[in-house]
Length: 321
Ligand code: ATP
Image 1 (cartoon, rainbow, N blue to C red):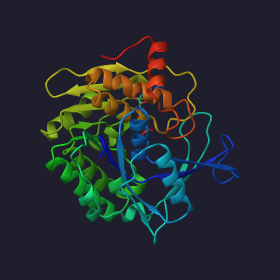
Image 2: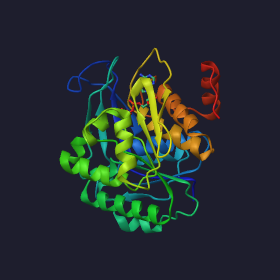
Image 3: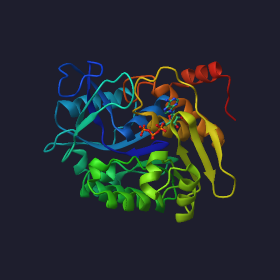
Image 4: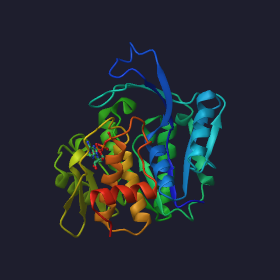
């Protein structure tokens, strides 16, 4: 088994080739693979750590494509099962020259939404050092919600280090009150929480990083660290017993697509912690991977190898401790 574990739905993306065209007018698309939790697994693997991804794919061409891609990235697929009755989820995505792209999802009733809790009993946790949980998977269906809870319970019982990204997707939850209640409840089981500043506004009514961190540190003894992502400005780190501090982001002149920056941030933090780096270095690595990712069009193609990360740090004149 691997050092890193996550559970989620891979999303096959059909990305418009026509810059700034609406999804209604676009005719030409290219195909790529994303999905928040898979992005994190791909990036953790690319930085030299072993990973295991739990998911469920349709027995269809998109499922075949996703499986091939996941294998090519070297991510563990022991628990990527096949579903003969349901399709692999996909999305249409705009190509934009500035700002956030428009996306449209076809994932209701997908194969991953049928991933049930019983599969998770076979997942061995002995070697897992960090498990990354995100608020997307429990929003897919009642079945995935139960599966997510079951894995979370097993991780807590085994006292594994859990990172949690709220990854708010109101369109998937279709019930804002439930979304807020459940995301904040899941956060109670996490050791490290990685919310975005805008998510704070929805989840506890403030986008002040200190308020967000205080809220999560106060609601559960288990939560030891909150790192709030503040976009290009970087990240705010707060622990239970010390003053919070900002770790500044890196300047990027050519922002191509911001999708995948938050996942990049998470994998930067996770890999740095797997390598016993300080929290400051973990947040700096998160900022570095986020900055590299916003310069590329796909969801995970900007994530660095160890050599690329080293070259980036050298060019920026910074180093980790
Ligand atoms: P998303 O869910 O859209 O990926 P998020 O809200 O989870 O985003 P962001 O704060 O947008 O996360 O981005 C994560 C990290 O990526 C930031 O903390 C920052 O370090 C880096 N980043 C994002 N945008 C930029 C940018 N324009 N320039 C430099 N770094 C950026």
